[in-house]
Image (cartoon, rainbow, N blue to C red; front, side):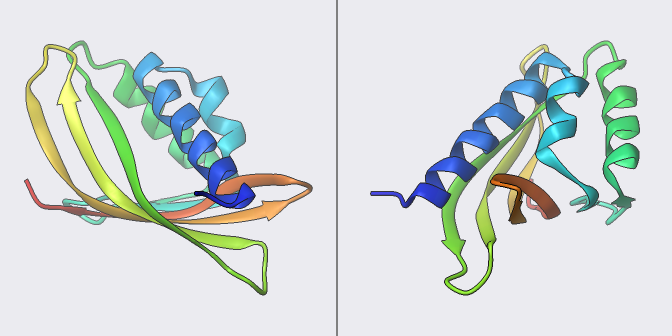
Length: 128
């Protein structure tokens, strides 16, 4: 059984995955904290800020046989003292034509403000 916070984060993650699959920048933006940080899995490139991430996704969505990235939540730990949570899981990248491109594990830090959970940071490790 999931707590209310866990369920909200899982629903946001599912919405984020759907937005990535659809190439929907307008749905991705509101899920990211304005100063969200993403560290990629292979080359550890740092994408600092929502706008930097949206620009990177826009470039990615323009690739003809682009990758579809899916994050699968395995565990969420909600802080008992602050409106923050840690999500851990697996990620995959599969081309539109169905070819596995990469995968691994990730962790994401979420923060709730004004009754909304948003991704504050994501860190990826490439394993395949």
